[in-house]
Length: 264
Image 1 (tube, rainbow, N blue to C red):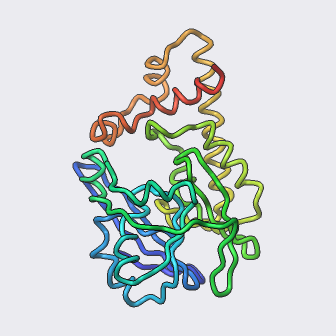
Image 2: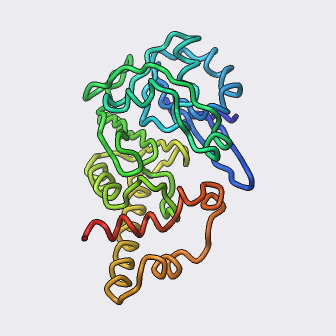
């Protein structure tokens, strides 16, 4: 675990690794609010921070286990209210049926009972707009502090040039969410996997450009008569290890498929 300070925002970094795959996960704290809770395997590392930090409530960007993994402990042991988009609550309240590889990477997720967000949420000195940004997950939200030009982006950014995505993600939907966020006036961005990005809007714009160019290449190759497998081989010649670990739940082919499905 590594703790850094970026102005008012405290970032806490945890890391997981499994079979050659490694990933960073950040949680953020500001003005009484904790944003996301990391993966279940990170609980023991995060406990000292939780116990010494005056957390008043928790905001969750979406229900994936690397963002809600220690929520149960925070609710039971510290009696903290936890908020998430209303439509995601039923998923949080039942036992998670995770694929084996995800349990091995992130740990076993316990159910908890969150409260529904309104359209905004307020801490002691700040107010945040809660903006629905699906694409990576259907109930994903970002938190936007208009007064300070600050965005907590959850998993909307992650990487400027993604090479794989999960089966239920969508590139076209993600692009629409990014375009919506780019209409906001922000610079500082706090990403749950990339950490603090000072020029956040520029980074988010870079990702959109990449996805637009990727979509163009996919459509061009498809018009020339190439099928999905052939397009994938041309655009993504290297296969990341997570593709094998996940038995193709993560795959570049899902990116291509959703781009092609948008126009069918």
